[in-house]
Length: 249
Image (cartoon, rainbow, N blue to C red; front, top):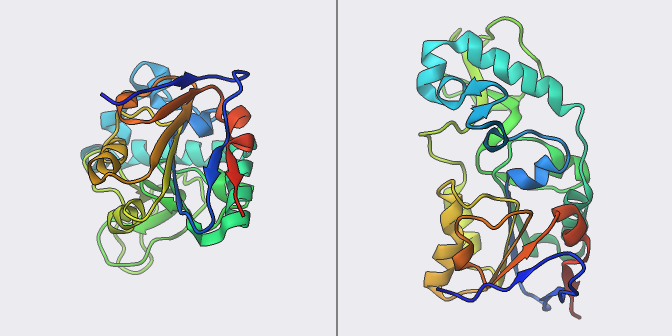
């Protein structure tokens, strides 16, 4: 077991120092988007906006009832236009402006809130809600904000389009890039992730075994993998992130 100081708002925690040339890896999860009003399936008793995960977020569910899956994602696309970045998103965008490519920002979220806040080059390991791809041919994923009422088909091969998201049972995107960035980072910060969904939940353990970097968790609740972090700072990300990092000359 690793020591786990639990630090909350108003308890005078010290900022995380980022030395000159040091690299920061930030992983964000559902908690950061929840503070902007995005619902998570964990908040709904195992349902995702009144739908079973198996029906709307698996390849099997799509094969069984693509209309249901597309109705679900069409509604989510409509909803995403009603939410806005919160101070935590803005703080990470500001950090990127200050340290540039030394920040590797990886998110489990499919919403565009990081980009709306001004972040660029975000690695969406679970895909992006406002993109689609063909379910059959090799056509590149493309921007698609349409809330489809009818089943959409590929204009190249005629097969069904699908949301460009990673469903349960599929391999997340960019894993080679992610582990390369983990192996280079000096500071690892997880924001609002439950610590229950792999492989993301295993990133902190990977760093522990490699003996690299300081590992800090920020979020409302203690994550399931809390024992692997050096610190667990409990509170709203929007309150903690704006003052979390201190850059050294």
